[in-house]
Length: 294
Image 1 (cartoon, rainbow, N blue to C red):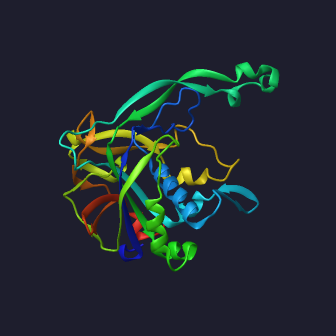
Image 2 (tube, one colour):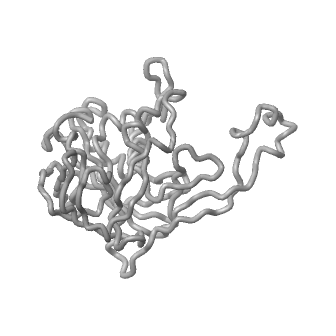
Image 3 (cartoon, rainbow, N blue to C red):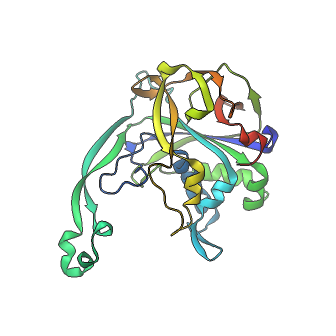
């Protein structure tokens, strides 16, 4: 898929207190992802798309109940996230922590406990993982397949996408409230060569050499396998369905907004420069996005 067949959406916003995104396969322990994975970003866009179009969050696909987020996966070729806050004089650090919460335990209990007489056993206290990032800024960049977007959303798809991004109200759990500050759309995409600097996370397999002291390793779900799990009672996921990402930060082990330089790409990696009205962004993507369909 050539760059001219893609558009880029950039969303900037601010967290209220932070966010909680439970890792795949977690139950009571609820260890969190330290940043929203691509699947969460696409889910946030899907929420806006359903609200703007007045649709339900689920649909029927070939006789199976499925999340309407599958439509968003058809539209979005790539999604990436970065910490950003250019307004504050002091950097805000995203910090992982676990708080005790009242947890609904019934789904993890034996059938005998499902009787009303056993209701006192339905709830318990457990540590719940969170990432505190109060008033911390962020940015999301979506690469949009123009043809698929028009087929699914209609001729006014650009307006629908802009309104849907502006309608994003949370990332992760419903308590992870955000305020959207700006939404920009660009068709000015250009493939470039390294060296180049980026502030958006990317899979580690796409690069060979980077400015390591400004990159933090994080484990996030493999995007394509998350898509396969959106048909209910279908494919299950486990912790092995993850890959290593690199998050640009101000310094290693200090999870505050920063950027790093890409010195050399892997054979499967590519760089795109996207020009927006308020500046440009560099994003690391799989080369197959430009050479075919993912």
